[in-house]
Amino acid sequence: MRIEKCWFCSSTIYPGHGIQFVRNDAKIFRFCRSKCHKNFKMKRNPRKVKWTKAYRRLHGKDMTQDSTFEFERKRNRPERYDRNVTENTLKAIKTIDKVRSRREAKHIERRKKGKKAQQMREAVKELEQSISLVKAPSVLKEDPSLTLPKIKVKVSQPLAENQPMEE
Image (cartoon, rainbow, N blue to C red):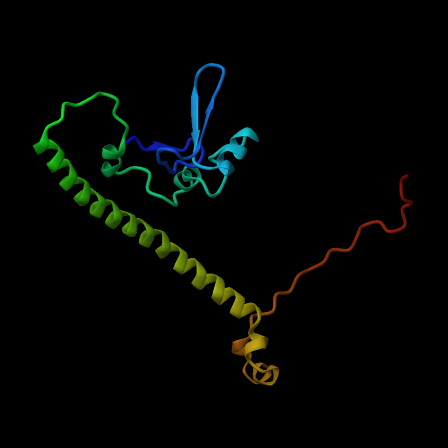
């Protein structure tokens, strides 16, 4: 059983599923669903469409380089069947899957770490700007340390006001 990859979104296509498009130069494009096929016909770039694997990898949302991806690559060279090799391969697949899931979880945690600090800064900034909604105005008048410092801005006067306007 051969499991293919969708050309547009990189999801898996099982036998009997999806659409195949063969171009005039005999290049085969496989699509998992009509959504991918329609986007391909509209000549959309998968790297610019947010829900595709290409976009997620390009923008650092998914892991791009990892040694576990080496096992997933397609190999076209036929191998002679050997029971021991098959058994070892099936055992290795389980361990590789565990390693990959652990690394993906670690990658997601690293992405979230920076986001938390940014959200905290945004929350503090919003609180500073709308402190009057949290504290009563009378309390703010009593304790000026709770308000933001007032900034004075000089406004320059126009030099010549009497000159006629040009048309």
